[in-house]
Length: 397
Image (cartoon, rainbow, N blue to C red; front, top):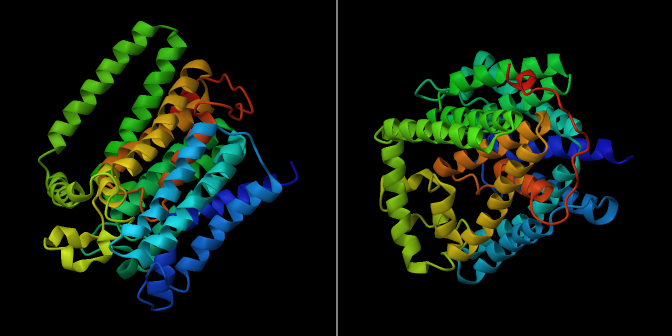
């Protein structure tokens, strides 16, 4: 137990580091540097954060976690590193792949925290990221607001700021349920303000789906009826399909569909192994369409097929599937604020992966999904530290 404060601190720092925006902001805005992954701020901080997670698990602290997703998450990093052998840009693929081998250890630390410490750690990181972003909008608008008038704060764009705000909203509900009402209310308010300012439709959609899915699942469990669960599921699915159809022809989705088609043509030539982890985006001669100059496939599945092929996608699906099934099972068997928080968080992260490449850039999104898989996935796992039977109305009110 003596290492608990160290774990909590590492989790808070990790979320801030793997949000990436603050590191880019420091390099570009504060130090006047180009802002590259290999820059004097970004690369050392990322490597040291991952190394701290590895050291904490290997040398200091070994909580029990699910074996299958742990192996799959590490194997994903190994496969990304192996792709250096055929990568279009081996020097980029090698060091990034090695970092991905270490990311599951950071997730391991997260998975071992009890719920209260987890939401406090994530809440502290969210408060710092969102709070600084809102402050920058007021004090340094030229840096914090893009040319379209959307907020980006300390992040690289609105589609980076809004998902952080979405995570903050979900974590704020967990804080309120854990009796940290002032902290949670402040974080909830800042998260909603940040989402309105960023104006990201994909993040709003993901948040509404996540809160709806977790709340419907918990409500159905409270009713104790599989029939009620199925009925609510049908209503929720129908609503989601309707929303997707309404949004499908908007420009943001039209552009994404074009990008997916373009990268799909490249991925088809290296179907099983991809062209090397993140290598395509460092090969400008292949960016023969202006949308390919945006730096990502805007979707984790096409991104995986492009970089590490079907094999990499399957490893990713094992981790994500373990997280989804595990939290769904926990919502049904052990309903309460903790299960709701994890359920909403996983749903939000998964939906965000549909329209953004959150498997890239050592993202907090990937780390949190691994953590959920390790904590709730098949095989041995850390049991929930506490059983809280308070109604979910406390969380969602």
